[in-house]
Length: 248
Image (cartoon, rainbow, N blue to C red):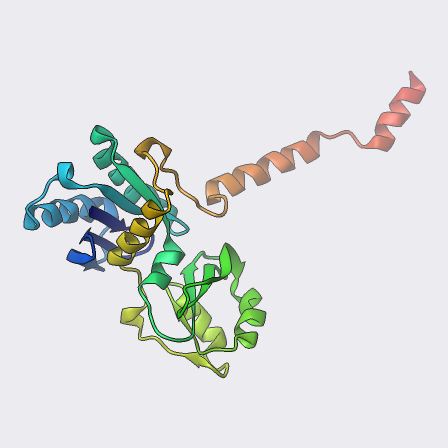
């Protein structure tokens, strides 16, 4: 099976090609350019260097979320465009699960992505069993305190939100440091998780490939707040309404 995977959920971008258990190609780029500029050229280079085309791809893997809304949309749109002509199956991979899949050993990995407003998209996994210890969700960094302080095994943070966690919990006993250069996601891990999902029957057709943002976008939040404020201004207080009825 040939699996082409992309990682666009954060500031970095990655492309990988996994053939059965053999990693044929992987590229990781953190050059400050937008994913819309770099993703398709990287995919094109990957396929050319491996002597393949889209006709040779059996499965696509892509971050479905959480992560940067723009980055997720770029990755999902690119994969949909590549998969549609042949209705190639796609695996919508959890960004946090892929971050954990790239790590092995003993202990606990807490995956964190910067969600702004002192929050991180976070999840935790046991490294030996790959058992999920915390579901994907957006949480305040401070709300991780109970989990971090009660963790029985060595704990480390990965993802572009790891620095926020280390700033708060770096001195907690049992917390180990991961060098910044080794904290970010890898497209090879996205491909690996995609393969597992396909084996479980969790791959979908490209038209069913959707993002999982885990919270509303800023525009959606502002719209909801505006509508709530407008509704509050136009709502007639109950006492006022009763008074009007009594005078009619």
